Image (cartoon, rainbow, N blue to C red; front, side, top):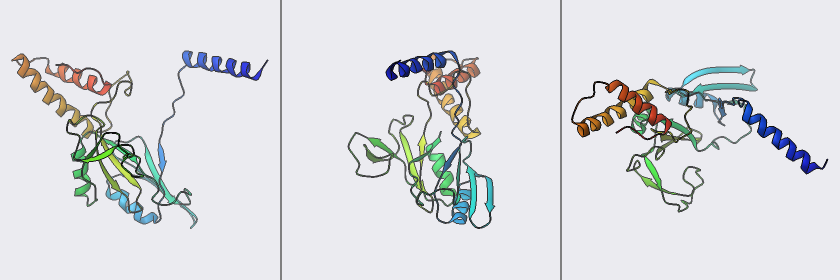
Length: 233
């Protein structure tokens, strides 16, 4: 049998297997960031309000520290002899938030410098090596339409590793599992309830009456919003 035939048979078998069995979960849980001063980095990420999960060392040659952002299923690690990457070269790491202004205010209250909100416009190359700006013009201020995925704010750790807040209120279709609606934190759920309340207020204005099943309306709105489906009116 020719090599191309073998490859074709293997592809068919793989396709058949994928269609009849559930794919294996592959959960992204850790990102490694390169730092020059481990204790300075530890103090910075603690100031962010992130949870300290571990600080392990083996003599003077190896140390690893792990932090987890609030509501995140993914953690970051850094330390001594953890990565060969140059300190400060990790860029464009996204932190998804339901309320950009609230996320910014939280960092500012903690004494962390964070940039003003911005959004992208057009397809003109911005002349920057920052991945989240390449290919578009950076425009000051949050997205005027406040569209989901459209507003950002940036900050860096002491080494220059770059972090980005991105405001996501409604997920694109297919990005939410169909077996339930979950929230990463109490803050995220509260933001969803506020959006549902505002939408329900507009609903009452249109109908001219109070709906006794307002709780069902809220639930329907939130589930649809999370799944990227058309919202109730």
